[in-house]
Amino acid sequence: MAAKQLFAASEIGLFEALADGPAGLEELAGKTTVPRRTVGIVAAAMVSLGLIDQEGGRYRNGETAATFLAGKPGHDVRPVLRFFNSISYPLWERLADAVRSGEGQAQFGKFDREQQQIFSGGVEALTAPVAASLAAAYDFSRHKRLLDVGGGTGSFLLAVLRRYPALRGTLFELPGACAVARQRLSAEPEGKRIDIIEGDMFKTPLPAGHDVLLVANTVHVLSALRNLDLMRKMRATVQSGARLLLVDLWTNPTHTEPLSPLSCRGNFWSWPARGKPTASRKPTTGWGRPVGANTNACRSRAFPVSSLPKPSRARLSLGHARSERGADKRHSRQCRVLAHRVISRQRGISVAFGAKRT
Image 1 (cartoon, rainbow, N blue to C red):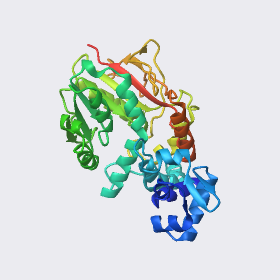
Image 2: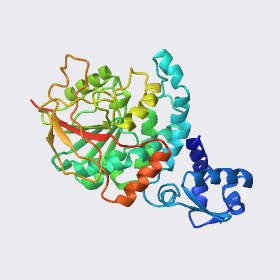
Image 3: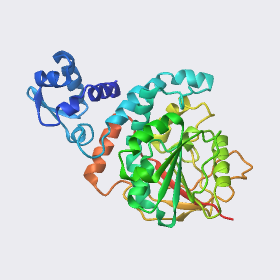
Image 4: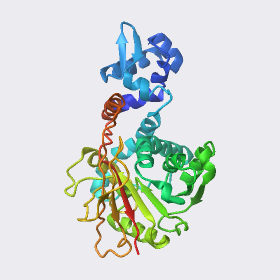
């Protein structure tokens, strides 16, 4: 119930209405075009959650709301709340049916235009810190072309290309996501260095000519067998020496920690039309070695993936990295407070690197 109150507050623009300073209920009703009585109910709920403060008959944004929900420059989390409310939350309502049947609800490729905008924007906002961390943690200077398989709006490509002006990128996505990405990338200077190619990762040949491949936030949605199919297909597409980068949520081998992937797993179960989701990792002894620099967001390890096209067992073994708290404790604390309130802790987000060998 607290989550839905938060979604409603964001949807009516309550935090934006308080962006310029404290306001009373009459003023909030006017700015949000919501009746005074009901805006008062939502405001009271946000006070109870600690997102806004009340001083007499006036309200003002708390530190977290002012930073992430009021439309100020920086990391805007409002698209995440729209995604949770419109796309994710309805799936949770059908979780019991999915558990009973063992089948998820097909979603990808079936969004209408508005749903696709909400989904793509929400995922971009949710993963923005991770995209920035990847660009900082891995040295792309050795590469010429980066292929992002299932790369959404191209936000990971943007983060990387901003740091590496000589690098070119390719976004490979479903048609609906590509439509959003074209609009998104057309407004960015780096967009001129990104090719957008429509296709299905399991039905369409992957674009060739890339020496580094990225798969972000996809492994957890697919079954183990589907993941192996994708890894085989990617390795068959590239030349020896190419690198594979995986960014995702991982649990330990016993599926008992960390909390975030486990909390999300029921939601992922309700999504796929391609088998049970994979949300685990089991590092292979001797594979990992440190790569790149430790950053505020992730610690990375590298592993060879020369056997990816030929595994005989239906199991996906990956090197992994765990997320770290940022050096900016104030910003990190705000992130954790807000994430806790929307029940979406991001701990467990990881980055893994691998290289194809001859």
